[in-house]
Length: 215
Image (cartoon, rainbow, N blue to C red; front, side, top):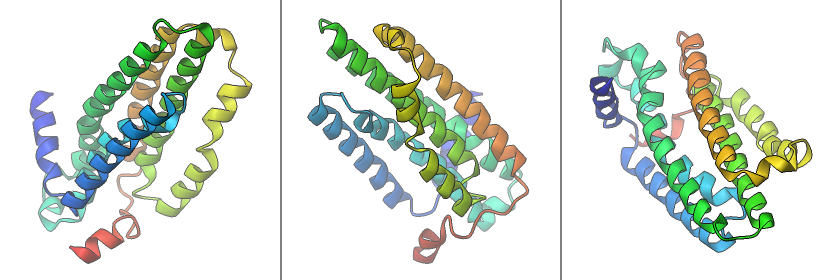
């Protein structure tokens, strides 16, 4: 597994517009940290951006598929179906853990209302990431369709959590964090399955059009 992980990270270097993508990743992380500090962690956007910053690795690996060298590689299927999640998952788990610990220190010593707020925020971050993982599994093959679905579902977690989740759940911050780890793992599995199901479909020319023109 470790050797496969090393190979996955080596593929990152063949990605399109790697410098620009890394700048985006750093930018997302900085914006996320700023938002989390500015809002006191009471909004999910900051934490979501922090974790999302590590998912640019996914895009870099997928974009390498346009290279003629990669097209002729025996690792072509793994580059589309396995390596993106394999390389992204450790960063996603790591950054979410940092966010979860940060929110824990805000909750510790606070009142019940504060604990409920941060538990709900953590759960929303997990739901957003779950949707993103599924989105990443199909967006590079069905770009327009997946973008439409993403826009229609992005507010769904907030609606469901605020409307249907029992408030008693938010009293247990640790349980909410554990649920998010389950969501992240499930999202990775579904993303891999979707990538395998759509493997034979050509990558959408719209997905990397701008990057390909500049390269």
